[in-house]
Length: 226
Ligand code: HEC
Image (cartoon, rainbow, N blue to C red; front, side, top):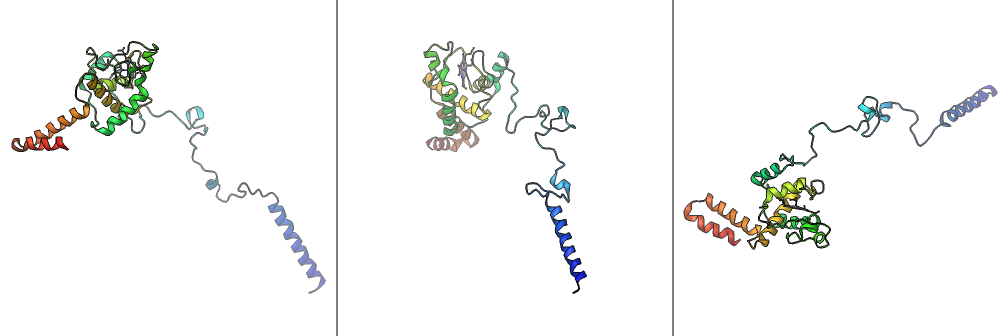
């Protein structure tokens, strides 16, 4: 190897080092430097709460379309008027079965939301009434009110005069469960059989209706004994 070639090799090596130093010196490990496919790094899609000029008010988070409802929400069509309450009392029926589980949930929720005014027994003598913070709470057995599940659901959805609405704290199902418990309280205030007993009898009678006369009585008896 002569002197000149070895000089050239040295020069080449020096050049290579210089180039790689200049290429890597600005390298920042925290962010991608060379983007071969830029739109894989910088997504062209819009972020949920981003500001983009194409949206009204430059906000990608927009109001939901008119008439959209949250998932699981059941629209309620009775009006928040005295007439609406009468209609709900006349036509509205609970879609849920009267059973121990629903009644137990209703009892719990009633204690949380309603008992402070209406009292644990539903006699209208809750803690707020005893302390004279709140007056004019009716007993569920008040003959002038003839409360029923549809009406209870209606007033717990909208409220009634001094009583507030419970639609934001409770779901549709929960309000029906509360109504079930309120009907149970009403029955015990009036000294009548509870809702589980009444519902059991009603469904046994219904079943008895479905089967021929001759065996009807027996089967109804069996169901009641279960
Ligand atoms: C802040 C006290 C208060 C609370 C809490 C309360 N209520 Fe009431 N409630 C009232 C008052 C006051 C009335 C009488 C309203 C009227 O007729 O002007 C009433 C009336 C009612 C009636 C009779 C409606 C009718 O048909 O006349 C029912 C049923 C009822 N409440 C159920 C409930 C249920 C269920 C809850 C819990 C989800 C509840 N209330 C929570 C104060 C309350």
